[in-house]
Length: 329
Image (cartoon, rainbow, N blue to C red; front, side, top):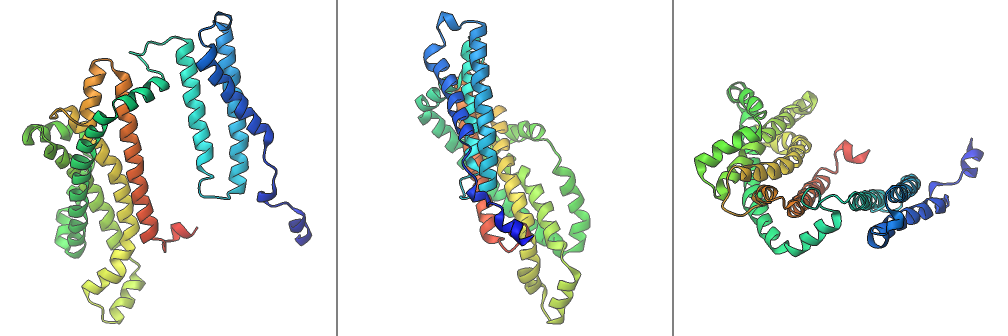
């Protein structure tokens, strides 16, 4: 067995799949040549266009699969996992661009990716102002308020039994209320300005934070509690050294879920009334004008911000709960 282990090559010693790399390059080249050079030539019309796109997509997909398998076996850097995802995204964008041009789909129905990115750059100032309204004033403010109140409420509910029996069932029930049903009520009650959308976000993230934090505070090992009590630890010390650390993974799960709910709540809230700014307002207005290039630009901005926000919370989770078993596996 030892001899077999010594004779077996390590993953890092595996040769680079040059055939896969060549297939990626060939596939991307075929799609790119069709898009930027050959797409309006008569000799590639009809079946020729479809065959060229199919050949480029098949070659690139095969190459991406080979490269992804190689990188999964090597794992020599933190950015290795993003390479297959980046290649897949590039392949999808190139294929969609080629298909939309080949079938001459109107831009008012489905804009091409290049048109979307060009529009995104052209209207970047407007979209940044909308993003400030939606993300900073509405989503982030409501997120901080909802999460803060949720953690404080969970601490009280876990400490007093009558609150657990009287409040927690309603928190579980209210957490299932659809945002679409809640948004128009709060907008009509509080007005079209950003506080109404911040209130939607706060209510939306409040209940998941309460439920998850309560679980983390109460699902503590009885042996650990007995050990703390044997050292004459009071309630405050039990919370500081046992319950709160045990609840951190649960809290961060709720915080990560809250980033998504916050973006959804603020954008959906703007659908029911806004003061002329916001990503949700921009999506609604431009969709009515068939300006789908601006609509997709706003969606891209919201998606990038949402992913970055989620990534920041996940990074904080790894920093503060690195001791947890899920990060040691």
